[in-house]
Each structure stands twice: as C-alpha cells, then as structure tokens.
Image 1 (cartoon, helix red, strand yellow):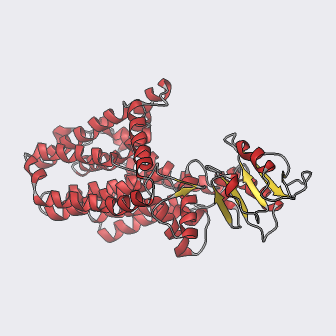
Image 2 (tube, rainbow, N blue to C red):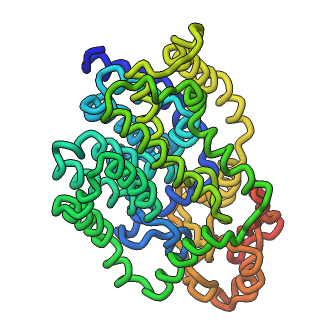
Length: 471
C-alpha cells in the first residue's frame, strides 16, 4: 500500500475507534487526578507544582496535566472531550509514526500492519479514550522505540537524539520505568548484532543528556518551589511501594502475567504461528530474536514484582508489535488458510464493535452516572454568584463539574470571614461548625452528607445557613 493511502486508512480507523462520543461519559477512575491539577494550573498560573485539592501532588510528574491544560486553553472550554483529546492524539501520532518512520525497517506491508495492530489492541482500546497516564506514557515510549529501531543502523545521531527526547518526555509523564523497557530491547538488539560498543558512542551520551535535561527542566524548579525532602520522600515511596508490594494481593499478583498478555489481544494469538525458520534475511532474524528476548525478560521481571500491576508492562506493546510486523512482512506466520485475512477482519470487527459501543452502550452508561449528579446537587444549593471554599478536600472528581470559583484551603483556620459555603470532610466538620471566625454567624450543614461512588463522604456547610435546607 502506498504511503498516502496507508495514512488515510490509519486516520479513518483511528477516527472510527477513538473519536465517537469521546466526551459523552463523565470522568472516571483516575481521570480527575489528571484534570483537576490542570484546572488549578490555569487558575493560578503555577505550572510547576501540580495540585489536587489544596495539596501538592507529587506522585506523578505533570506532563499529562500540562497537556490537559493546553487543550482547555486551546479550545477555550473545559469538558470531557477537550480533556481526553490529548490521549487519542498520542495514539494517532504513534500509528502515523509506524506508517511513516517505521517503513524503513518494516517495509510498506509491515508498517501498515503495525499501525493497525497499534490502534486495535485491547490495551489501547481500554486506555486510549481516557485521559489517563498510560495512553500518553505508552505512546511516548513507543515513539522512542520506533525512532531507535528505524534508525540505529545508519542514522545513529537521529536514533539516539529522538529517542532521548521521547524518553525524557516519558519521564515527565510517569517516571523512569520506561528506561528499563527501552534499554532491555536496545541491549538485546545490539547484542544480537554484535554492536554493544554503540552504547559507548557520543551519540548515545548526547541522547542521555537530552533525556535528563528534559526531566531536569521541570524537576529542579519543582524541588526549589516545594519541600525537597517531602518530594523526595513521595518519589521514593512510589518506587519502593512497587518493588516491596505494600498492597500485595496474591490473587491479583497471580493474574499479572495473563492480564499483561491480554493487553496485546487479539494480536498475541498470532505468536504461536510465528516461525523464525521462515525468516530468510539474517539481519531480520537477529532482530526478531533480540525483540523476543528484549520483550519477554522485562515483561516477566516487572510482572513478578510484588507491587506490580498488569498495565505497568504496556510500554512493551510497541516492540511486540514491531516483532509481529516483521513476521507478517516476511510471510513467516504459518497459519491455517481461514486465518490469512485475520488482520483485515479483526480491524473491521474492532471498528464495528467500537461504533456499537459508542452509539448503543454509551447512552446506557450515561444514565448510570455517579459523579456529575453530586455536582448538580451542590450547584443547586449554592447561589450562582457564590464561591465554594473546599477545606482539604483530597481527591473529589465532582469538583470538575462545578461551574463556579473553588477556593482550596488546607485547614478550617485558613477560611476567610467572607466564606459563606464550605465543603469539608467528616473529620473537619466539627471544627467548621465550632469556628468563631464568623461570629455571630455559625456554619451549619445543608442537607445530608454527600457520599460518592467510592464511599467517601463530604459535607456542605452554609455559614449562618438553615440546617433544614436540602438539595
């Protein structure tokens, strides 16, 4: 297939799968932790230290928050569609990179096959339509793999520099685990090719400097603005918690490997039909052997960590797809005749299923919303011109849907005398009700405590309000 036609095909498949009703469902899972800091960044102008509620949020770097804030700013509106757009664009960028850049290493047929496998694997079908870190982080790591695997033989500077850029951005998206996956594959490929000395090249060191520089451009100002010891402690806990397994559950841990493999469905079912003996080109044979080792070893190592989750191994999707694309290009899949149109039919079925999901299933799910109704109740209880003061609210997704100024404070004592409507957690309710800041007025609860889908409770108070009010 010609490159132009391949690009059009990728755009059509991507649009059919990832765009319909993208913003129809309310935010769910951890999406609020990516969106709320972006809202705060736009309101405060502080893009260095992300915040969730009244507290700095250091568990993840801020790249995803920056992208969401940029999308809000670009489109001039804050909703689910503009929040999730960066994720689907990242998925598209990798698919186009497979078609355009990877064509050097995979050929025309292999490149289009890789792009279609990328767009239709279960992992990205689950994560790609959400504003979650995985879609961004996995896509950036995939771009690093594509650039390096395409150019490492004859364009060393381009290979190392571009991969360094994408790895650095990956560090800003989630952290250093992408380096383990990247170098496992790189070392395996160079070892098979007898080129391990390239790890000591100037081009490689420049790539490392670029990568470190991108991360340091944010990390250094962040450490200066925040409490250095606290930030380092959070980062350390994030790492040691994954290795030590602070929340270890045997049942979930035993399913890490099968669930991790399932992310490559339906394409992982092609692997049993792959035959190394059918690959005639020696360089391609070495690359396939290297990719097999470079994918399998880190997959097993990370999956067997006590604190690991299946999604941690998703950055290996790109090299696994590259491996399958070589087998497809070299006609090295020994499969039954009925399966020879498997790629075409899988793409058609996936597109059809996603259209059915968007047009028939999403409207049903919209009737079961759990986050937006809470915001609606709060909005009905507060006059339009009033601000809401939230006392150490922690992570409350419904705050995204409030169309009024929200002022975050850490303690009840930080509330100003002008505050009229206050949102508190149960542990702060008594302190707010007994506060003398508004004398002779008093803060009283409005209606019953609000309970969200996680079982978390918050209380809405009105200063000098009527405790019999309801919403």
